Length: 227
Image 1 (cartoon, helix red, strand yellow):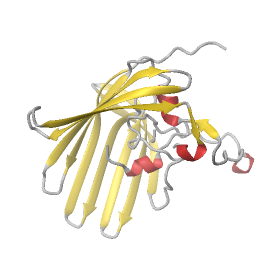
Image 2: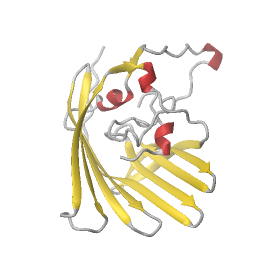
Image 3: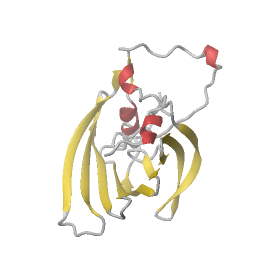
Image 4: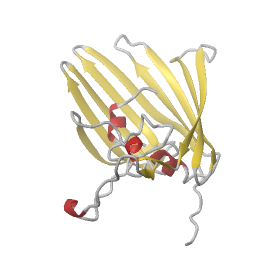
């Protein structure tokens, strides 16, 4: 899956992406790290120092996927439209195969084809990835978000006629005559986190657009055990 601007912005300070001292959602769409932005409960000068390089910390993708029972899955569709009007379609299905106290295993199937073409004109790839419960601190951090104009908020997203409460992050970057605006909506109770995404890149008279929408998901949350 292509790397998005918002991926630079959303990590989780679990969760994906998408918050996560700015970690990111779409880059980790299959990993699942929705944006979680909670105000600090202490003044900045009273916050504990961040972990040091090499220290083990909670892994956002694990934290997200481990809240679901094995078998939880999500399917999203991404449509990319080039300046000449040519469109391609990508369908991505991620499924939680197994989990333990130490790791989760997620299968991702990506189907690529030209929009509107028959199913015979597609390319399909399948990958399986393990996400450990703990990673080194530097592995949980996203690239520096400097240079991006970022806004965020909360909004209800329609899914099959029902509202899904989501948090969103919008990032704008300008490089010469090229401007890219990307917005990602994430929800904690949806496997993978991402429920909607849009991206528009404008360069002179040329405009390239991409949109991602939630097609379906199946998820059962693990019941929380009493202490």
